[in-house]
Length: 70
Ligand code: SF4
Image (cartoon, rainbow, N blue to C red; front, top):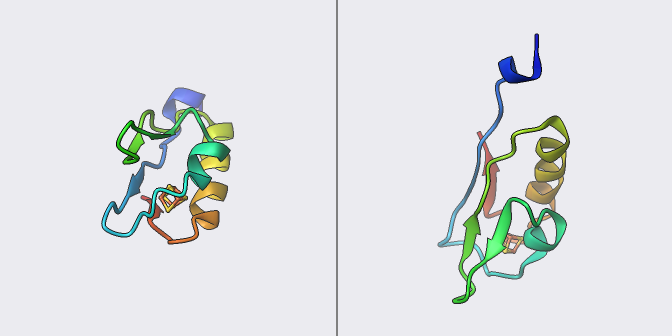
């Protein structure tokens, strides 16, 4: 299986739960960004195994459990 064939997981945020602490944005700047209004945005879906792993750690460390991988 080549890297292109790998099925990637997508990450999403529940903005009703997110407290904009920025924990995830500090851990994976490529993916999570706080915009000028302190609203978390997903700037980029994980497209490598390394990013997928780092996002999975960030999902577990979110203090509000606002992130999910699917
Ligand atoms: S770590 Fe969780 S609560 Fe903090 S900004 Fe990210 S999604 Fe929101």
